[in-house]
Structures are given as C-alpha cells and as structure tokens.
Length: 289
Image (cartoon, rainbow, N blue to C red; front, side, top):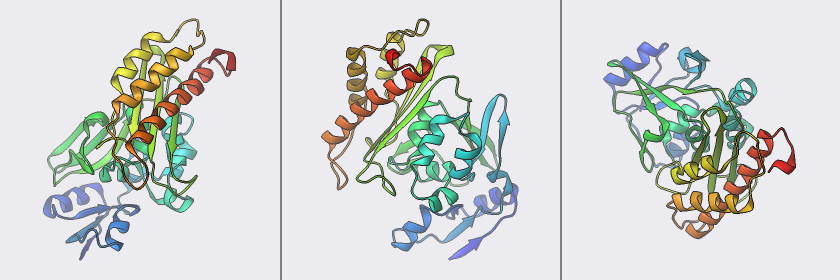
C-alpha cells in the first residue's frame, strides 16, 4: 500500500488528481477501522495530517469556515458558543481519543447515515466546500449525500471545509443509542430555530439511507411558533411536530434497533428538543415551553 504525505493543500489536490484511487485519511477514525477489519484495501492512502489549511477555522463572508480536519475537541472548545448544535453533536462522538482525532470533514467523507455531525449540519443549513485541481465548489449539506456511505465527491476532489452561519437562535441535538457513550446512533435528531427568518431547521440521522431534513415538520412548526410574544408551545403542536419528523424517516430493522423503534424515538426526540429550544428562546422560562 502506497502512503502519500502532501505538505500543502495544493500538493494534496495534485496527489488526489494523480491518484484517484487513493483514500484520504486525516484522523483515521473511520478509515483505519475499515482497514483493520479488512473491509477495505485501498491501493494507497492520502495522508492529510500535514496539510495545515485543513486544520484551521476562521470566518468567510460572515460565516464560520471550519477546515475539514479540525477535530471535534476544538469545535467544542473554540466554536461551541457560536455553533451550539454542532458542538452538542460533537460531544456525543466516540471517546475523548476519537474526538481528538475525528473531524466533521471525515464524517462527511464517510457519509454514514449514522454520522453524528450530519443532523446538526442539516439543521444549521451548512455548506460543504469541495476542491480539486479544477477549482472549488460549494454544495449544500442537504444535497451532499447521495446514498448509504455515498456522496457527491468526484474521484479527484477533497472536502476542504464546512461553512455555517453563527447561530441566531437556539439549537439542540439528541441521540439515542444502545448505551450512553462510545456508541453508533440508533437514531439522532438536530433542531435549529432561525428567529430572524421565522424558520426552523431539522436534521434526521441514522433513520434513512442518507441523513435528511424533515421538511414538512419544519414548515409546520415555523407557522405555529409565536415568534413575537413567545407564547408556550401547545402539546398538540409538539405531538404533530414529532409525528411529522417521524414520518420523514425511512428507517430499517437492524441489530441496533427496529424501524418502528427508530420512528418512535425520533418523535420523542423532536418533542424534547423543541421543548428545550423554545425554553431557551424564551430566556430559560419553563412556563414558555
């Protein structure tokens, strides 16, 4: 197996173009598992560990630009107040060791439906920056996933960053698994309130062939919330929102849970995250929710 170690982004893109069969590796939290279990035997690995541009975050036109290899621990510590939903999701990833190595770019590259960052990215209207020697393009997160562990990347392209607007309202993330830590999600849900636009964002994980938004649920809830006077959300609205989120899923039965359980769990998580987010929007008053 050939091991390619570019020292700059330009070198990495050139190596990717010259070796389209090379598998990119940064933290290695997904790739090394597949290699160790003999699920994958790539002809070469493209090590991105020395590409400094991928390990930086900053701002770009008012949005936060997170390099594809910025680890989850830094997202939590350095961006948690501005991207609370993504930080919440990052805290549920694996163990401290995995959070020190794993990244959102790696999560996107693997494109697993159970990836923890996907629901938060979808709810926050994230965009994915993709580059090759041919140039750079931006793809909305909702259009990035094309199937189970498949995405829109061409053979010569690399994920270079993720772009998100700083949160303008409460964000929440909820995940259910077979234990409390070091677990693949049975189902996950992300919620973001966008008060300035009177809009709601959602993200459903581990309950369909790809991560997806619950569009009908978003439209329904945005029209029911009292954005101005912030009156309490009625139980009937919460239940309907949960039902619409569950209806947006297309889960399967597997060793981690049944399709019926996943739908039920999504409805519960949707109601709970709505309660938490609306309480936050009202300034922490439980009476509001």
